Length: 329
Ligand SMILES: [Zn+2]
Ligand SMILES: [Zn+2]
Ligand SMILES: [Zn+2]
Image (cartoon, rainbow, N blue to C red; front, side, top):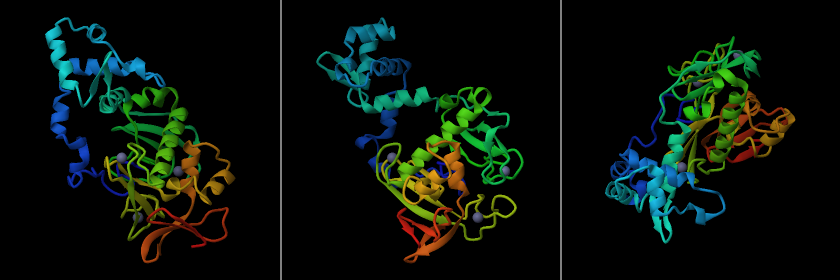
């Protein structure tokens, strides 16, 4: 529900203990990498090289020196050469015909383009034609602090943290560039889009593949020790779900707390239950259906697991900490 680790408790930076710091930056200190970017001209160079990318024809990636200098509009060739030089190796590579952007350079430009570093905006939509998965009343779409939420217009919702809006049914990190003015102009489209995106990412995590970098993922079931969500989100865990799955990439530290049903909704028998509910593509409905499957914490071989009561199965379906599925327990 909240990929920064929010469905369970506070937002957590999985890298904060520094335990995996050694794997980053290809052996180069991160401070050094960032220092290399600390200049507007250097970003302009990356931008020009990035905008030359076309899928399929690698020869087009290469921009000759003089053309690159002209495109960024730097007349002082000494200054241009100095800054280009600082990007070489890590962000830009020199080729026979000129210069081309490398993967870390592309990531920098795309991060800026997606608006993840823009100023935060806040907005709440009118009620849209989508139902709360708890009470059936319409939802609104809210954007605050970089998170999109579906919010019920009448019940208490499924999440109650200090950073979630009233009636929150989800809390999904989305860069400002991908939200734009959609809260006001196309809230239903935004609702579908971000919940669809979340569901795809949850499935990738569910398959043990980091949706951000392709690295390997560790997963763990988190069961609430004193769950009570009768009158709204549980005071103990802050959610309506008695158990969630914590996933963390071993490589880039991308992490999140996802509903188990969302992480395995493409695998049997969850996919059958999703299809049976009339869901054929991933959007808000797919998320809402998965959130509506009743679940209880259980154990399997002594380890925490979650048992689902799917409308298409007569026996419980157990999902274990490795996200393996066991029909009939
Ligand atoms: Zn509701
Ligand atoms: Zn709880
Ligand atoms: Zn990763």
